[in-house]
Image (cartoon, rainbow, N blue to C red):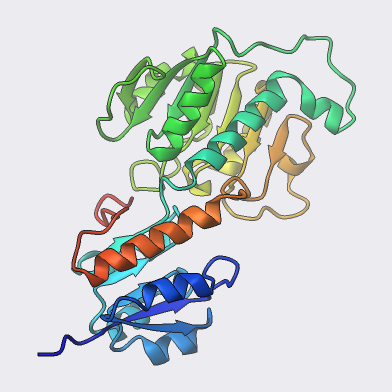
Length: 322
């Protein structure tokens, strides 16, 4: 009895990532029927009805209409770490498996966070923006305390780097994680509200969930230590951007580094864009010379596992939102 081929729909295939060698390897599996389509809604709708898997589809295309037409969809993959826009009710309640690019971006985003922290700790932002250097000396990271909000793959890569700089690192998370040499203690999210005044550096590295959304607001900013450093390299809506403007509270910080904002992007005349102690990096933390390869390797591994009816890597818990 012949085994029916599983139809896999790949979206917007970049030849620099998914080269001929990639498809040659996949074709060795006789159970695969791979269809390549443009990043276009109409093209996806034409091919989705009998698809077993939909790979690299953006949240702008994958909505309720597309999902309900995908009668045989068993697996959806998003290359992004942020997936909150995918989580509409019908999809969340379905048995369709969902994987994404979380953890893969840990090294480059951690490097980015460290770069922003060092920029402020060494007053490099003042030289770069050609402001008059303040009399106050730069600070050492050694011996300073850092809170990392979110201790997944990205958070732990950040903790590793900051521990190497001599910082005391504590994480705040929504679930238990292994104890290790570079995190001195770990707490639940809510505990940060009581402890945030202890830290010279606070880094946001969590997913966007009901628990984390707009967690960082004016009330929390008021509790933070004067001349502390605040970094967000996760999701824009975890921090209420305009709350930084209330009573000019942004001025209390030595530096604020935002790779993401809400809304995104900010208007060109937004007040925060004009401040010497604020750096916005336009959602670039997840880019590097190696991130595409890691993304491709995950897709290739999961396709093989899917075709062989094996468990997939980087499964998303649709109820938790990450």
